[in-house]
Length: 348
Image 1 (cartoon, one colour):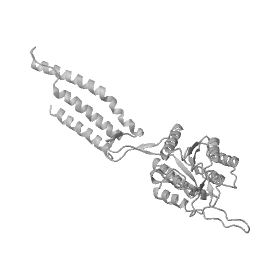
Image 2 (cartoon, helix red, strand yellow; image 1 turned 90 degrees about the horizontal axis):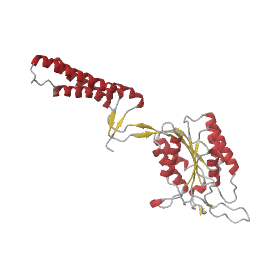
Image 3 (cartoon, one colour; image 1 turned 180 degrees about the vertical axis):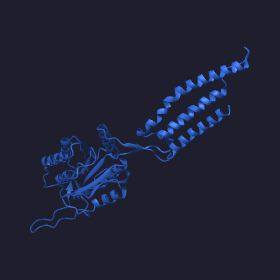
Image 4 (cartoon, one colour; image 1 turned 120 degrees about the vertical axis):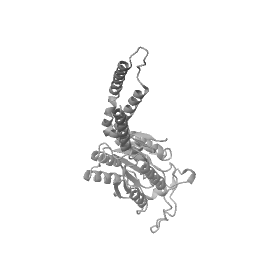
């Protein structure tokens, strides 16, 4: 793409003078006929040629160009050498990131770079969403046994990168409580309603299923309803991370727990992805559900963008590089042509 024309909708009124083009053409034709009649009266003779001269047609063309250039300057029309960029300024993302011990299991899709841990894959998705929705604001809520707001919505890249890395460094514990981040988000929105008309809550977790622990699916669904009550138009994007077969958490992330007297030491944590709690949230709220093994970050990003646009949340398109002073150039060109025509007419 070499470039593109860019016009702000609120400045489109500046193109109204273009409607005068037909009047200019009609006026110039009438003027040429009048000049031809004057020449006929002066020259006399049936053999005299009284048709309009080529110069008058050139004047018409120059006058039309002057009007178009002036209108373009009034409307701020500009040519940008770079492609226009989308800015999602009306959109807020809240990333509910599971940082529990089970997210260290290395069974997430990794492609050529090899196997990734579930947490690494989730962080990559977060980074992709940040770059894929420029202008949007991102908040981070890490959770394991408990949850807290680590970063309020911000579009600052450095702050986002820092806190996303910090989220992986918070103390880890066995067990994932999916109720806590939802309630923390509901409490935050109850006190400070989101500015976005349709905030996006991205829930990234492996489901929190571990041996000896029961996942309270019904309670998770109720917590999701609390979030929806605080922001009725919230879009939940639930992403189940990990494989469907049990995988041991690496020893460096999951040291063996000390045994009590008379009991053998417990081995490393083994865990598998558990979809039902995430599916319950998406079904309860009418959101989106994905499995990391089956969906790429690009596919998830496209689905989110389509859902937002379907509900009227569209990006604002801004020009790329170049053309910043184009409006003044157009206006100057139009005035220059008008000055040239005025000079030509004054010499006649």
